[in-house]
Length: 605
Image (cartoon, rainbow, N blue to C red; front, side, top):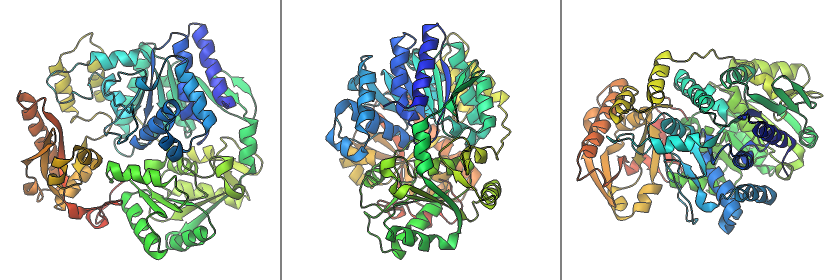
């Protein structure tokens, strides 16, 4: 059954559509409320009223793309028993999604995904569509940005760029921009990510594209900024009562509020040195624990320490972070559905959108929005909330944000608790939104980047050479730093088995790749042609360079090799990928890149 907030948002969209108004909606709802599940319902409404032919559902993380594509779309449309068992989605939700899509003639052959990696699955009908050639596409924001700015994701390095197809697909779609808060919290180049996101919003306005922005953790300042960019948008959010104030529509969901009120929320600080004993105490009480760390290094160290201290088997504890192969990440996600799994140690890869639930959260405290997203993995539904208690432990360590500590301490000293799921104060509980509002970032847009983006989008036609020149000036990276593929498998084995190559890939940043090269963990740059893997560059001579110079040389070498391959007509259509080969002794199956390789200096999640 559709929740009241989603119902109201759909009613608003339908009313706008009937009146000839292009719907622009900012949908704010707590974690676990069902924002991502609502996207197919918006697709139905927009298509039925002729405002769109399709829907593009954009997400910030590849893990969420995989989860929603397989566990929501494919699961609802195929009735696959393996997906039913692994995903454990509510049958009523799956039925509602299937009915919505089928009512506008979207079947399993018309749903697809797009991101910088493949989904390894034996499920029939799994389909990747880089050019958005489907009626329902779940994609990363990176891929949406490339295609929106006339840089076809499959032809970034090609001398010819057939940008018209994906661009037309965007113009004919409804845009569902999910977990939009992440754009305004980018740990890398915040100015760049905000500029690109807001230029996408301008495209949606100029081209009359129906747009829904969904998030659980928009601070007031970010919300105001989005509303300014998305002209005449309607902001629909939960409130203590049903009311309308200008463009703001507040909806009371009494059932949801009553459920949250039944939860006894407890939020406390613990010292880093207490973490092991606390996890032992909790698991011995039969509770499932999610330990969230801000960096890969912290996650690896915590995983090893817990496994050893608590004498845990591989089925009892799961590790999940970005420097694992596709196969290992997918296996980790499957393990989480097992009742045997007592502990998850993970980084931000499971913060938003992934539908898992634990009894207790122990978390680093670097960013308020991350804390709120992580609390969304605790007590998600009545059926997964044991004893109606949700306990949050905030770890005092080098990651602790002063604003977070000050806010939590103030709430506790006043004799109140934090409700991590209601966006307004109620009774003795203070809303998590107050924590989000403690951090105010002054973000400016890059004028230089705006000029380049508009040079790509404004002309009626643009040459592939001009696109290439602008892309080269941006170091071939729009939203984030250019991502490299690293193969964690022996070359001999990969040559024999193409599926092994696909599942053994790690997608990582140039910064992290440079660290691996520096540590002597990269055997070289290889080109894959069919089922053959051939070494084309030895990178050992780069190890002596300073980090900044090393990153530049890696990019220079990579792009040089790629250009030569693309210019060679005998090679151009035979090359399936360029990948770096990781030495076997630098990777541990099921755990990722070795702790000793990564963690002698700082690294991120």
